[in-house]
Amino acid sequence: MNLSINDLKQNKLILLEALSGSRAYGLDTSQSDTDIKGVFILLQEIYFGFDYIEQVCSERNDVVYYELGKYLKLLAKNNPASIELLFAPADTIYYQHPLMDRISPEPVISRLCRDSFAGYALSQVKRAKGLNKKIFNPVTDRPPQPMDCCHIIQADKTIPAESWLAEQGMSADRCGLSALPHVRDGYALFYADDCMTGDARFGGLFRSDRKQDSVRQSQDVCLSSIPKGMSPRAWLVFNKDEFSRRLRDYHDYRQWERSRNQARYQGTLDHGGGYDAKNMMHTFRLLRMAKEIATIGQPLVRRPDRDELLAIKTGHYAYDELMAKAAAEIREIDEGFAACRLPDEPDIQQIESWAIEIRRAWYGCR
Image (cartoon, rainbow, N blue to C red; front, side):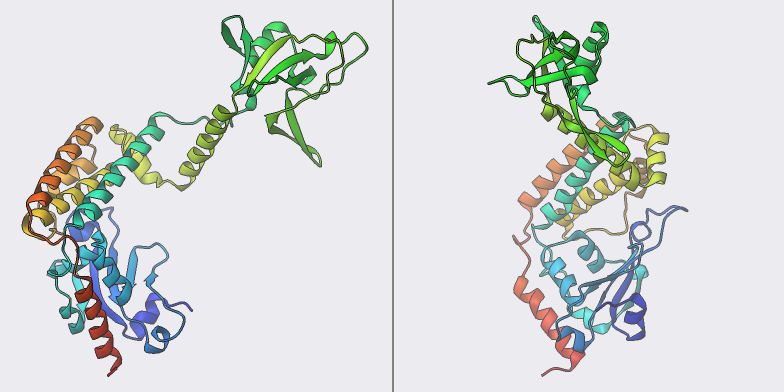
């Protein structure tokens, strides 16, 4: 069974609805979307049946409502999005049912926030590094070919097989390969013109998969039946591991191209810093929130460091400078959590009791 946002509103199932994202943080610009997060409770017949629905969201995921049970479980894990909703500034709250007043921060906030906030921020740093690598190391539109990873052994060096064939005036289609015993991915290379007993018919260096009228080159070498008495022209090595890596990188890059946010990517190119500046801004927002939890016991959703965060978003800082800055902030976070008096983990029993109390009151259970 599916529920829509309209279903939640028509059945008056929403317990909490608040502005979220950049507009809640005070980091919005004229291009910012309006994000909404909230909490709802299921109709009694759905909750007591088999079809538990834990989340309802819009097509673009800019409006997300968590079912009460999921929301409380997220709080029990000190999930950043749920904790931000717990501390939503009053002017960002569109609606709050009185039953939500039973939920308070004290049993929720714990040392677990160090990992949920700062740990997630670190994952964003790694993501920014990955983007940095893709921007400065674009993958060519040409798919990798097995020939790219084939080399001919010549004395104390190796020569790219394609170059060697061109120098010898040889065609790859007239080559035949025989596996070398005890040499991984090593082959003896023979040439059809050298056959003394007639025209040897070799399969070429690589297999071809024929489907109707098309011919697609395989990703592996082709072994041929070599006539007796033929001498190899050279020894060839095919680095299959390297070819697999190049193929994987090629497909990963093409997938990234298809799925990337073009506006954000263009912004990355424009500011010249080589990183996703919006992603990096939210990385530092999470780090600052983690530090606030360690020092004052709660994150400041409306950001007091707005100007600095927006400067990061516009690419004001060099990439290496931000990496050093993030490392320093993580050290401060660790020091703060080491000295704080927060419990090691949330009070799961208390959080679960809220779920029971609110459902009993809503459903009229006794």
